[in-house]
Image 1 (cartoon, rainbow, N blue to C red):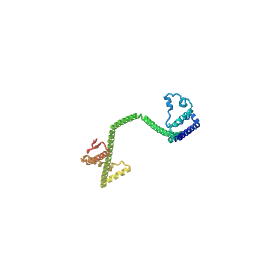
Image 2 (image 1 turned 180 degrees about the vertical axis):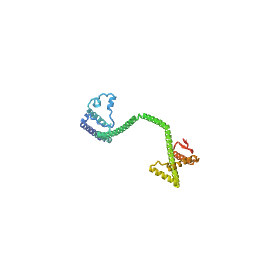
Image 3 (image 1 turned 180 degrees about the horizontal axis):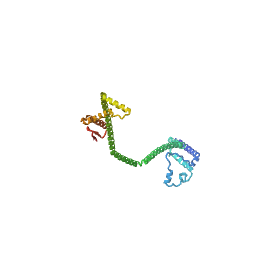
Image 4 (image 1 turned 60 degrees about the vertical axis):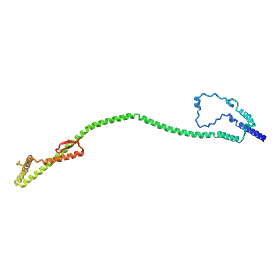
Length: 310
């Protein structure tokens, strides 16, 4: 059993070495190329590192930086693998096969799908970065707009000071106008009352004239209606005036003059002033009604004298 196991191990080791040699010979051109896969998700910092740190000494390359060809690793590996497998320092079993398959899978994924994975992750990163930049641009635009608004409002204090100065001046003008306005209002109220009194006096005078004329006409008409001599004298005077004669006095005119003189004499002799008081009371009541409705500064007492309310 031990001999068979030794033979199987030797056969397996020889197969491994032969396959490794064949694979190395097939992949030799790839080993000489300086092909570097790009597989990263973060931004490179080579330029920053070159600016901040001194340049490292150039490597000689080759086997472990000795400058020897990398092909020397093949005989070294074979020489080291034979005694390792011979003396069972490393046992090739199912774990080794599983590890080899896993390593082969990783290598194949790295070599074949590394670029695709990188592009996918890089595209996602670029999308996130773009969205981040757009959000930053919006924030910057909002801050710039706010800055412009604040700069535009730098003179707001001066504006408010100017407004306050104008308001103060307007208040002074209003106070000055307020001191003068009551005087103008009082003057207008007095003028209105005087005009009303003048109109009432004119109206009363016209009424008195009308009443006096009606009384005179009634009295003269009664005299000429009852006295035939007066009728004859009035008729003769009218005929003489039509003929153009010089004539004498007009009896009708004389009758009216006589009535007016008699009425004036009776008025002077009369001590009854009830009518005058009634007219005055009516006028005072009318004036007080207007003053109250329009908010005048004064009113009239019973005697007709004005008195201030404020």
